[in-house]
Each structure stands twice: as structure tokens, then as C-alpha cells.
Amino acid sequence: MWYKTVPRYWLLFLPLMLGSEGPPPMTTPMTRLVYRYQGPAIPPPYQRTIEITIDAEKIRLIVTCVDEVLVDREQPTPAGLLMQLGQWLQSDHLSALPRQSNLARQPPKIGAGVHTLTIYHGQQLMMDASTAQFADQETAILSGDIESFANRLRQAIPHNAEDRSTP
Image (tube, rainbow, N blue to C red; front, top):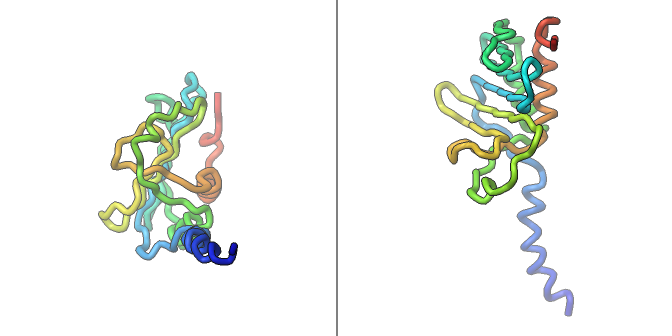
């Protein structure tokens, strides 16, 4: 008798098994990536906001503390970095999930920073996602191993000693 119920359950698990391989590869190449990290709400001078903009020509790094700009510099983009970023997006399973109203009812995470990822192909917006719990409905929820992607991105960009200094 149990063998008659197996096909029904198999059909329920098949979509889960097919989707377990991760997101499909990006078919449209990105031309610009903007990563933002807003640190947790702690008193100055320790709070940091980081914005990294990468396109084919340059990388721009901006580090601020409240309203003070600590670092604002540009450097040439290393060859192949945009393609490498696309690979990291896939290997870290980063994706944009639709924002649902029931998520807004969850209590805020205390001490957590907010990651935001915006990806363009030319002028076309391909992804606009954030880990912020109370973002607008157009901003999707950023999902995947965000910390791994952020660490890889920070390591790929050469830093000066003043970029890392904290008072």
C-alpha cells in the first residue's frame, strides 16, 4: 500500500531537488555593481558606512563615519573583476527575494549592519536588494552567503592603511 503514495510525494519533492543546485547563472553580464554596508548603530567614531562602486573602468571606495568622509578614492578596475564578481554571486548563492509584508512584522535584529547590493547592465537595473528589514517594497530581500561575498569583495580591492584605521 505504501508504494501507491510514493509517486505523489515524489512530485512534491522534485521541485525542491531541482532548485537545490542554487540560482541559475547570470545570463546578462553586469556592467556596474554597487555594494553598500551600513554598520550597526553605534556611537561615533566607530560607526562606518562603506560604499564600493565597480564598473569596467574604475573602482570607487567611500568610507564614512556619520557625516564625515574618511576615504573617497578611485582606482582602475583590475581585468576580469566584473566576471569574477559574477562567479562569486553564484557561488555564494546571492539572490533577490520578493519582499513580503509579513517580514515587516518581525522584530529588528539588534546590532546587525545592513548590506545592499545593486547591479546594472548598462542603465538597466538588474538587482536591487538589501538585508534591511524595513526597506520599501521595490527593494528585494538580499539572500545567500552575504558575509562571504562582502569579505571577498573587500579583499579584492587594494586598501591603504587609512582605510582600515579606527580611532
